Each structure stands twice: as C-alpha cells, then as structure tokens.
Amino acid sequence: KPSKEASLSILEFARLIDGVLPAGVFNVITGAGSKTGQYMLEHKNFAKLAFTGSTEVGRNVGLAAAERIIPATLELGGKSANIYFDDCDFDQAIDGAQLGILFNQGQVCCAGSRIFVQDTIYDKFVPALVKAFNKVKVGLPWHDDTQMGSQINETQIKKILSYVEIAKQEGATIACGGERFTEGELAKGAFMKPTLITNVTNDMRVAQEEIFGPVAVVIKFHDEDEVVAMANDSEYGLGGAVWTKDINKAIRVARNVETGRMWVNTYNQIPEHSPFGGYKTSGIGRETHKMILNHYTQVKNIMINLSYAPSGVYPQD
Image 1 (cartoon, rainbow, N blue to C red):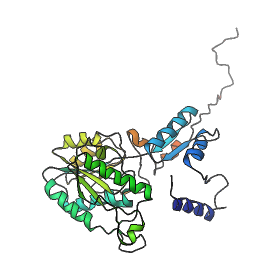
Image 2: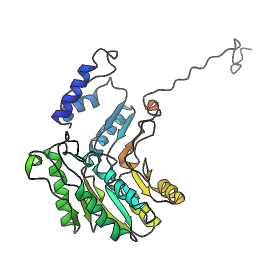
Image 3: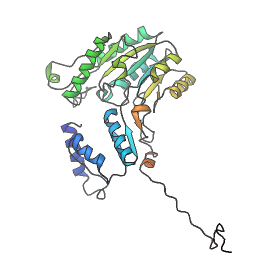
C-alpha cells in the first residue's frame, strides 16, 4: 500500500502528462489494494498482470493469472547475500556494505541485508562497519548533508523495530542502532538508526525474513563452499554481491549463488538495459532490459501455401 504522499505524487504525474500519451496507454486507478487491486486481478479485459511488491501479494497475483491462463511477471522480495572475502579492498568493502543496506533507508527489494564476512577478517571488519554506520548522517531529506532519511511511514518503522526485538530473543547482538530517533526534529518522523546485528546464524528469522529497512545481519563464514551454501539457504534470490580481487573466485561465486543479479565489488548499481529479476520466491521475469517486451508480446505464425496443387494426402482417383 503506497503512502499518501506517494499516491499524490502519482496523481500529479498523471496530471502533468495528460494528453501527452494516447488514451489508454497510461492509467492511474486509485483505491485500496484489497478492493481495487482484487478487482483488477479478476477483470476479464486484462491480458497480462505485472506486480512489484511483497512475495505474499505477488503469490496472489500469480494465482490470479494462472486462474485466467494469462501471463504474469512478478518482482518480489529478497534477503540478498553481500559476501566479503579476505582479499577484498577493505575501504571499498565498508562502503559497499553501506550501499547495500542503507540506500533508500534499506527499503530496497534487493538490499544486501545478509552480510557474510570471512572469518579471517571478521574481527577487523565488524568494528569498522559499526564505526561507519554510527557516522551516517540521518536527517531531513532536504538538508544537503543528509545521507539517510525517514522510513516510508510509522507502520514500517514499527515492523523494523519488531525485528530488532526478534533478534534479541533469538540471542543475537545489536552491534549498533536498533532504535529510532526520539529527539529533535527527527522524533516527529519515522527515522531509524542504521542497524547491524551480529552473533547471527543463518537459520534465525532475522537472517531469513525480509525486514525492509536499514538493518543488516552479519554472519561469519570460513570458505567459499560454506558461504555459497548459506547464501542459497533462503527462499529468496533477487540480488547479491561478492567482494574479492580474485576474478575467478568472483565469477564462481556469482554463478553459484541462486539469484537473479550478482554484483562484483559494488552494490545497488541499477542501470537500465541490465536484466533485473528474481529466482525462487523473489519473482518471475526480468525487467530493465528489452527482454521485458517479450512478456507483453504474443508470437503469431501465419503460414501461406504458395502451391495451387492439392496436397496429395487424399487422392481423388
């Protein structure tokens, strides 16, 4: 469900382009997803369904498309692995961990929310990342020095905080953050402190369930086989990254992790023309590439007989 502000922005965009596109090319339909959205899923005049959002809702969209035997593309949730080997560029790696989980306040489907760190650099990496997280300037979005803004609404920050409590109950440690801002101007909004959770095992809820906020878990690994297995031990498969100076290792890991996109020595670079989409419950189909047109296209074959002679299959004499 979009926020009131997002809804108003969409309506204003529709007003600005009114008359620019042919009628019917772009339509804005308002209303609650449970009512208006369901009506769209059941409407017989839709020949294709596309959805970006939660896996729970996406599953319903996929079922509605299957019921009517029409195609659907789904870009859904994620719990992506951000993998750091001991031969990574350290400064670049610390920056990349922040790019992975703090971009857009962590409200990114392909966010690098599971940070895997090789055991040989773990004790150096975690304190450096905590220090970096604590230095992030959280503030009002119109201030030039703001690096991270507010969560989308109060409901979302309450969900994020509930996962902080789950982490504590599971025996994990809140290395930094783990709370909202309660002083000054930021107390009036849904501002969350950048959060790292350590002493996490891959089977914990905070390592398996999408939190959708500036919260990352940090998990130690020993070797390549172990980290690939842990990365794949997830119902999701949308994004991910590997950090190493060994290009052969980077390609091996990128190929073996079951996910639609793997970055190498970067994160959250999302250029157009690069296919984007998920494995497993992260979705069906690919976007931001010309192949998306195939999902909206039917292939028709018209075969013409250029001979005037009968086929000969059924002779007349």
